[in-house]
Length: 107
Image (tube, rainbow, N blue to C red; front, side, top):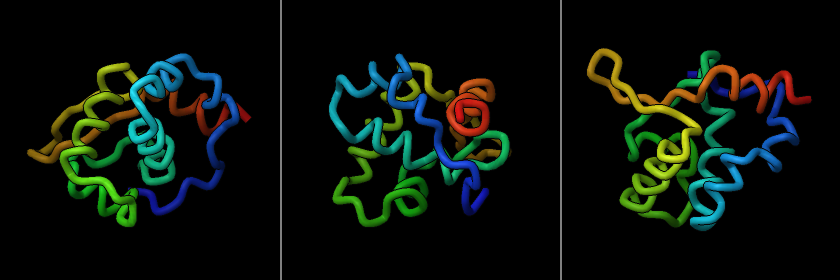
C-alpha cells in the first residue's frame, strides 16, 4: 500500500454526486472515504478489514470498529468502491476512473 498520495484530492470531490449521497447519512462515511484516498495503492485499493482500516486511516478517531464497518459498507452501497478478496485478504477498490478523477485528472 502506498504511504502517501502525492497529488492530493481534487476539489471535484466536494461536488461529486455519490459523495453528496453518502453525506446524507452523517459525517463518518464521507470522512473515511476522503481520508482513505491517500492510503490507497496506485490502483486505488485499500484494506477491507475494518480493524486494519481503522489502524491505518484513522487510529485516533473516536469510532468503534462496528461504526467503521458500517461506514465502509455505506461507502460500498453508494458505489464509491467495491469489496473483493484477493488471496483471502479483503480489499476495497475505488473505481479506477473515479479514482483518477478525484486525484490526478480533477486538478
